[in-house]
Length: 67
Image 1: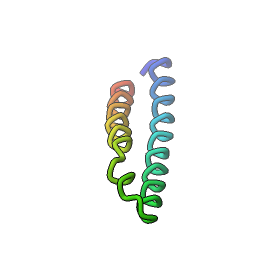
Image 2: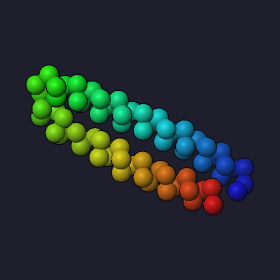
Image 3: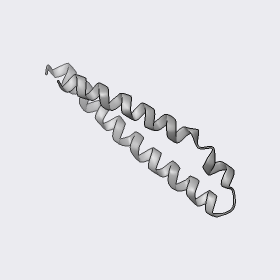
Image 4: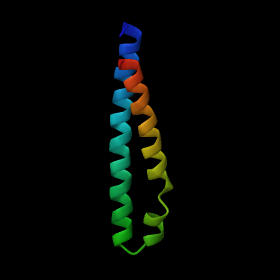
């Protein structure tokens, strides 16, 4: 792997780790709100699905750069 690809892969990996942490925080907040009676917010968290989808794409890109 050349230096540019390595730097890009490392940067993407850090962004992915941040994205996973943000997703976990959003889910915790959603569950907290749900336990306080606002079930609609927890059921309509399309943002979590979007974060999951993008995390998969980022992971795939990291793997290709590291190959």
